Image (cartoon, rainbow, N blue to C red; front, side):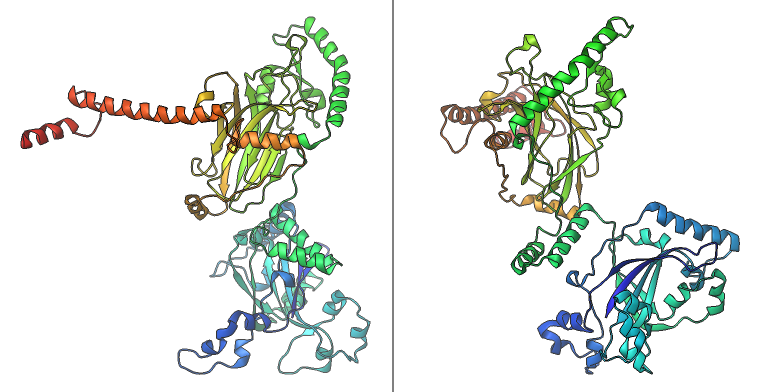
Length: 587
């Protein structure tokens, strides 16, 4: 048995045969194979009902279940316009014919079949390969065999039915019901042996001539669907690679990877890291960009001198909006701020988790220190931001020569990070891009505990102070500036938050360049290496212990002063009355 899916359009005004588009065909599934495997070793113990009567063997194996390997999982590509067009025809037909709903809220069967939607045809494959019917011998494709299929009739099975495909029945879902059922809940449809014939009648008026010809086979088709995500499409592509692979060993490796717990939600690879690109290419690109921008900058300066503008316009870095080149090549500071806080246009998917998503947008930095020589000649910090989360590292574009860079919606700044554990921290670091044998100079970093600190679905715009290190002794020494970002957390299932009580597994971030590795290590660990003894790090731990001791001593001192001098600093608790009562009773 196999199932074929077609998209059936609404009736044409000309009365011609309705358009049908083939979508998908499952693989052949032996009748009862899945039911036998689902029963398992304890089948004999479950073969009796409440009356201790044996169940017939036919009843035990009458159900067939398709799996992913059988092609049960497929993507139906459509548009809202196509669905709305079929639904609009249905609404117009309802208004013109003044039809009423049935008691169960649905229209009559013949009118329901007039809508556009999905039709599922279930076929039995030929039983006799030595067919004597010429049309089945000539049919070389499965589509031709299905087109010539005869209705399945258990009472009388002719030689033609045995020789060719037999249509078990069809089920239909109208366009306006498709989106209503995108909730991943299982539902069943009755198989009708005459449904396909009635839908293929060319004229709209022919529906009434076949009224009452519904022939139910008694079978049902169970379905479940949802709106497809990028992960679903990537998974289907992986399945196609397995099926099309000619190397048996390679196909087995791919199949094992698909069956692993974390491979059911693969994502497209993110673009290469900025620090992984050849520095010579970056240098040439920056030089060409600087040379080509000299003339436009000079013209803009001359224009500002002879204009009445209150604020000069600056060149947008690293590049303007490709869709609005003239309008976004030069912008004022106020216009840059307005553009900076607009929604991002391009999002980069990264990570391998399946618990949820972290939507992160790097908006701007302010007050960064200049770590490049030659500030008087306009040579300033070339800042970019690195984000490390779980097993992935992503980076923004470089903003050249700016101590307060802003990343705009059309630039690389927005990331969708897949979550593997709700308690994993989000590490963000700001770095100055340098060319040469030395590593890129790190400016500051922050660590954001995502966990349960953020309400799912709520958008947060946050500003953090950048710190060179997480150690107490390094706080307050220098002003490293601030970073502003926009963050939103979503969980596929709220119950995944319960995993936060467990310790996250160790994750590995891979990098092909030494400079990239140093940046990732700085974002996570700071400038100090915990595996190497450093006197400064040792003093930092001692300072942390002494600071905690001083805090505890201060709290105890404040509590005693409050109690002795009757200050009443603890609201809502009758501490003084309780102490006075206890003192009076015992003394």
